Image 1: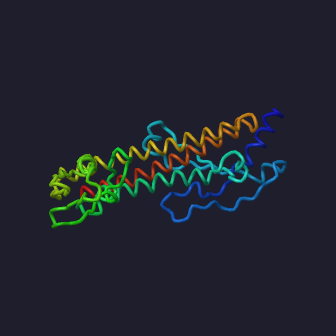
Image 2 (image 1 turned 135 degrees about the vertical axis):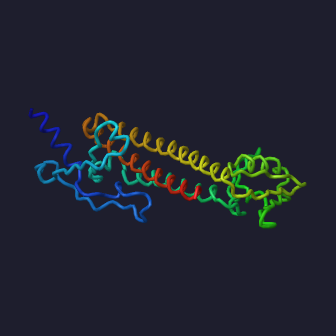
Image 3 (image 1 turned 30 degrees about the vertical axis):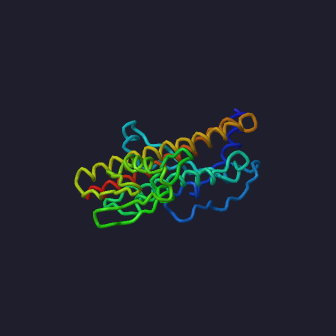
Length: 261
């Protein structure tokens, strides 16, 4: 019993009742932690009581019959194990990358700027299309790409445009690539929605890598801190990842609504 109480006294100061930067969505402008006070572990755990709340359960959680209790770790007390603010920022970078992909690749009406960041694979590496060719709007129905600066990459540029998922069918005319702008049909909108889902799934794969790397960093501290401390850190990281997934799902739902009208 005495050993259990000592373990409880070690774990409870790690928890903090107020929401911090790690609980804020990435869409908020400032991702800063609150100022945490370092607290002496010898103090009574009563001074660091934890309020755990049960949020409204998601559909998945309801299916399982329960929601998950949330925790907020006192980041200052685990800073020598893991930088939670850094982990949060890495997750937010994934969200921002998804937002950029949505902006660049999922416009209903194709514009010259939509082609700028199509990645072209050449024998010398991968480059954005706008670094290899001059992109301009020839008419409301036609975009042209002048490849005279790097003529040897013309074939690769055509392939990249074809595989961009933007429903484009480029035509070669010497060193000029003609890209007819497709009509905004229902099929085109649905193709863009499918691309949005692909981009979202790709972002979630990146997020899983961030989560796995963070948990692996925490596990390296085994032997120097208690198993319960590691478990709490893992739970906090998973909670941050779940919140980020929910944010990406919200972005995807909004984009689908925008695309389908």
